[in-house]
Image (cartoon, rainbow over all chains, first blue to last red; front, side, top):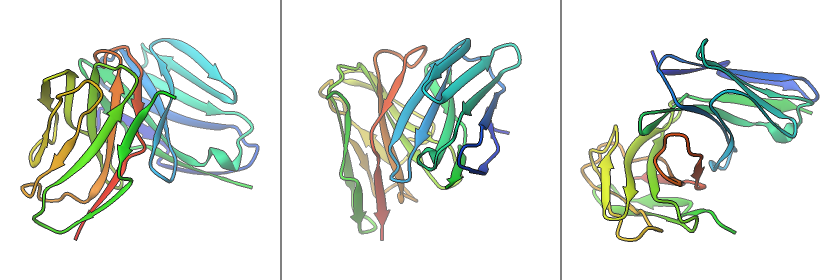
Length: 107
Length: 114
């Protein structure tokens, strides 16, 4: 079992839908990242959070330290949001990555 | 603009040849990392360096080598000893140690060994 688990693995939705991607981790961490990987492969850091909630445009990330769980929400989804979203957790001096959630938004 | 540059984006090599992937950053970050990504798997750490002239093995260092002669540069050599080198390679950097700092990623290099 991976120390960082994401769900769902794949998600297809219609444009405009509210999207939720979940991340659970089984180890103590100091911070959690949400990353976005586009088809070309490059990765962009969306959020880094250690408590509470962060918002950037249509993206919202939350973390519950007690429950070892984080969610990434996308409001008013758009086809350009189609990408792989990766959850990654800081533990000691390393980052542990989830396998990613492939999101496809249909126009 | 500050950022991380990986080159080339695509690389083809014959089996048995060593190949070096470039990673340069102008963010003045101390720490740099190399990850490997395979289909259906999370990123796995190959090597990391937290300061010039020092680096440590990650989880899958066998068949790889690195150097950190300059703060800005952290090249990765995929040697002929790496049994399955075809993969997507990502370089990253962070201000200090990974703990509690944001990591920045390059655009990746897709290596195909034929």
